[in-house]
Length: 76
Image 1 (tube, rainbow, N blue to C red):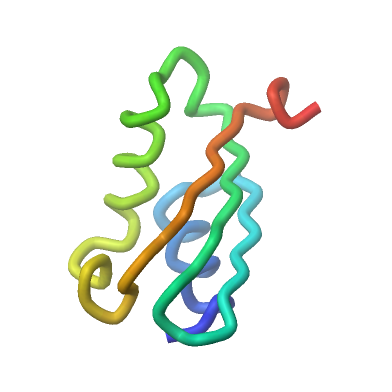
Image 2 (cartoon, rainbow, N blue to C red; image 1 turned 60 degrees about the horizontal axis):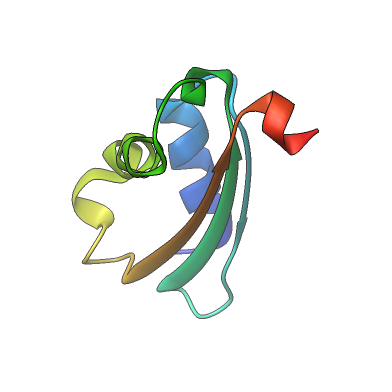
């Protein structure tokens, strides 16, 4: 697994989101996801939304994913 693949999976599952992903070791990643659909959602719901785009890869090919989830307004 690599950061580009993780980014592509999130973008595919969340059309219109701006996504950046870092992670050099192939199992631990940090992602920032900016999406208008996060408006009105609590942080846990935002994270679950991103997790849904990755499905069974979480806990397997993706050992850890640190998330920062923002609306476009919050991102400035």
